[in-house]
Image (tube, rainbow, N blue to C red; front, top):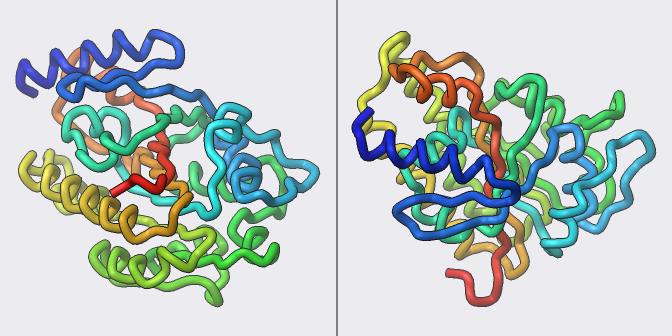
Amino acid sequence: MNARIQRQLTKLIEYSLAPNLLYIEGRGMSFPQVRTTAIEFPSTLLALLGLEIPDGLYPANDELTKKFNPKAVVLVVIDNFGLFEAVVYKPEALIKNMEALALIETDDPYAVPLMKTIFAGSRDGFHLINYVKNSGKVTKVICREQDIATFGFDPSYTVSPRDDMATYIESTKHIFKSELLYLHFLDFESLYAQYGHRTPPKTLLEKIVRRTDNWIKVLLRQARDDTLFVVIGNHGRHPVPLNYEGKLAEWRNANAPIAIIFQKRKSST
């Protein structure tokens, strides 16, 4: 880890200790920081979509429901992409458009338990995607085949592409007409899996981040006005053996899942 990134992360940690403020050095930008929990995510998304919240769900996050008033929601999940990676690789479109950054408190930050909590919340038998679909909203899920059984998706609204490129291409067909669109990008996680206990080359990591960031930029351009993007970064499906030491390694290990949130306004590009 070079000295410049070390300084950036040190400053980020210092700024993050201040309540309700996130600052990313090199961009000269401050962002509202929202603390939320995975268990309140289902009710928050339902409230944002204007749907009734069933009994038994944890209340919605008041800060987010007051800040945004969307007509549609795009929920993007990127495995092994968190606040740490956002600072190191600086995805331009995500940072430029970000209106709020939510730090998601959860007992288990890895992909499967985190997403199961986001879909089910605090109510046994509840499924966010099914509920939205059954409420009459145009719903589409684009994910790998193994996610259908893992997360309980109904094949009637699910498309299973072979890789992230195919996921992106499929999403361009549904971005304008969907009221809830769910995408799951896995190439960041897959790259780590390919390298086993070695850290992948930084150039490859940057390439994947830059490519995914560009895809989201295109989707933002194609989306209807007042579409809300919620880009969730988690710890992936397995621990990642990154070669960081000392306080930097401690902070990386403690890095919570995040949601980068922004809404398409009429002036968005």
